[in-house]
Amino acid sequence: MNEIVDTESQQSGGTRALLIFVRFVLPALIVLSGVLLAVIGHRESAYEVGALLISAGLSVALLNLLYRVGVRGDKDRDREEEARDYFDRTGHWPGE
Image 1 (cartoon, rainbow, N blue to C red):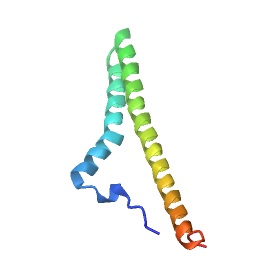
Image 2 (image 1 turned 180 degrees about the vertical axis):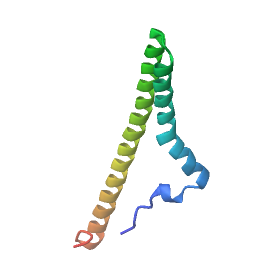
Image 3 (image 1 turned 120 degrees about the vertical axis):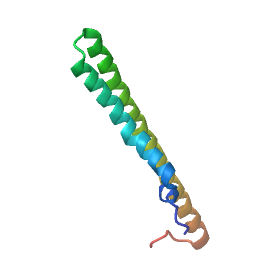
Image 4 (image 1 turned 45 degrees about the vertical axis):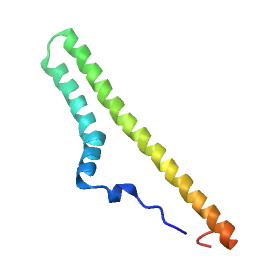
């Protein structure tokens, strides 16, 4: 049975750094800017904009998480399809 190659392990350093930035650093920076604005700004509008920035940062983090869950499901389906192909060729499941 062919092994599914993890695409993240084959990425270049620049692509890997960009992924880390988008997955972790960008949401953290957005949330941090919202917290700082809410703490430093002493007007009601600063609190509202801070809350909006915090919400936006959490939304970016959630979208990243949902994307990763979706990609993991695709890998599981690919593995299942490979196992079924192996069964069709040999008459038994892999690992049995």
